[in-house]
Amino acid sequence: MGIDLFKTLGLSILGLLYVVPVPGTAAEAPHVGDGASIHVTIGGSGVVNATAAVAGYANSKQMIGSLISGNVGGNLNLSTQIKNAGVVNVGAAVAASTTATQAIDTVKLSGTASGNVTDQVTLTGSGVTNVGVGIAARAKACQLIGTIGLNCD
Amino acid sequence: MRYFTLMAGSLLVSATALALDAPQIGSGASLTADIGGTSQSVGGKSYAGVVDVLGEVDGKAVIKQNLAHIGDASVQANAKISLSVKNAGVVNALGAINGADVVNQSISSVEGGTVGANLTLNTTIGSSGVVNVGGQIGGDAKVCQSIGSIGDNCKDNPL
Image 1 (tube, rainbow over the protein chains, first blue to last red):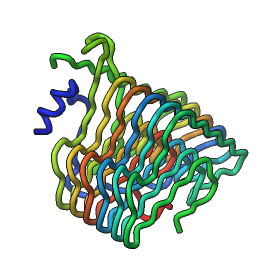
Image 2 (image 1 turned 180 degrees about the vertical axis):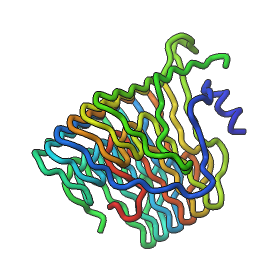
Image 3 (image 1 turned 60 degrees about the vertical axis):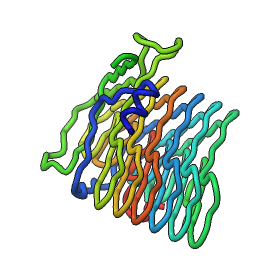
């Protein structure tokens, strides 16, 4: 069914693909030197973390152009441009004890930047959505755009 | 392969569960990945596709898709990562996710390790679909997508 679907869509399956059947080893938080620069441009596209519903104790986290964790030893330049595009974390409902977090061009969190931080976001004709449908029970939906700090405590 | 074109300049998959030492990379490392195609077309448009897992995933599986990515490495100064996805579909897991799964899609990112000064990450996504999970998600699954980012988006409580 899936292969037929992709043939219909005119897509092929190539590249470096793998499923690891056991939990992988977690890398330490990165250490990055002075003058780090991140530029993201999304145009006329759909970028989606989860298209369908999220339930149970699941967590859905989408980070674009962001310092998530680790240390930057000097200046950090972030810029994100989204034009005529749809950026979605969860396309359907979130329920139960789930957390849906979307961060775009954001400095957070457990990370540090010791120099100047430049943070620029441009959204033009675009839809940026964290949760596309309803939220129920104890679910949390947190969206950060061009932000320093966190909002999902 | 009737309609398909895939041009992948280079794709770097990060260190996996394999027992490998972390790579040591010198100054001026440059990693470029172009996903998209122009040599064949359907109705005047060309398509390419990169998919990690097509079907349903259960149990305690770990599904990771890394494109133009530095995993756990030591990289000296002036490293540059450039990723371009145009007229393409990039999908990590297309089916439903159940159980205590980890589904992590990391594109043009630095997940761990040490990188020297003047790191540059450039990401361009145009007329494309970039999807982490296409199906329903349940259980204790962690679904993490990071594009053009520094850090590990899939660790517990990063936000």
